[in-house]
Length: 110
Image 1 (cartoon, rainbow, N blue to C red):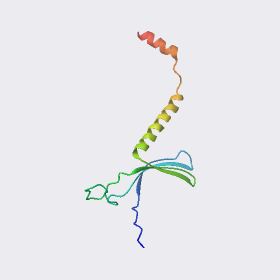
Image 2 (cartoon, one colour; image 1 turned 90 degrees about the vertical axis):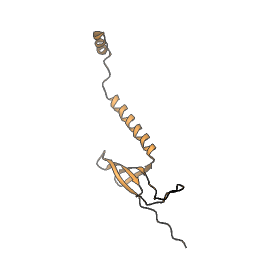
Image 3 (cartoon, helix red, strand yellow; image 1 turned 60 degrees about the vertical axis):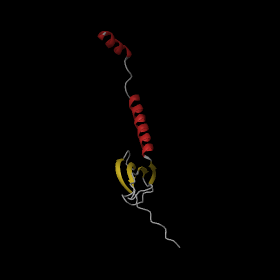
Image 4 (cartoon, one colour; image 1 turned 180 degrees about the vertical axis):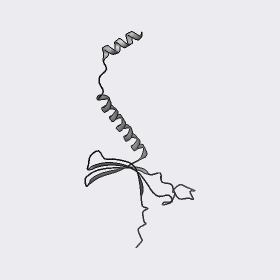
């Protein structure tokens, strides 16, 4: 019987944590393998491989949690979409422009 190879332990560092409600949290982590914990698979590689890692996203409510590991590109797309959605919400909360006042300003400066 052969022994099962040991998997290296993942490491993580928390980049941000939000608590939108008392029992809720959203955590963003950088998840990676420690330097030198796995071999480089590239031809001619003589040193341990570097693992740039992935982005961990954990959303929890009480004892329930949902987590995801995202590729960096996926995390950037999600960040851009969240930024856009927040901008739309903030824009919709602004007072509409007063067309007559803006027209009067434009006429006065022309």
